[in-house]
Amino acid sequence: MNNTNFCPLCKRPLPEKPSKHHLIPRTFKGKDVVLLHRVCHRQIHATFTERELLNYYNTIEHILESENIQKFLKWIKDKPPDFHVRTRNTSVKKNKG
Image (cartoon, rainbow, N blue to C red; front, side):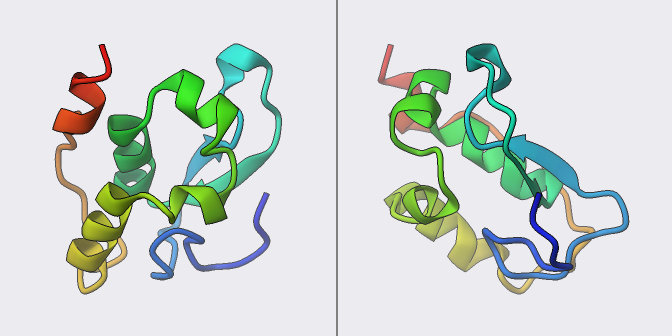
């Protein structure tokens, strides 16, 4: 787990109860976890399939390469740490089948 008080994705301070993201999905027996904002965590799962998370997007560095994640980060950067909004699957993920 990350030992910091900041979200490794958006760099904003973490809330009192952060969300745990398995870098390799639990469905594939992943154990390594990072702490994120709930909204950041949901955006990851709205953007990528479990198979994509397993095969490539299994590090924060690789997740940050995504254009959709970059757009999200640009939008979320000025929101307060406890900000939350409903997250929908992106059209990119929907078109993957």
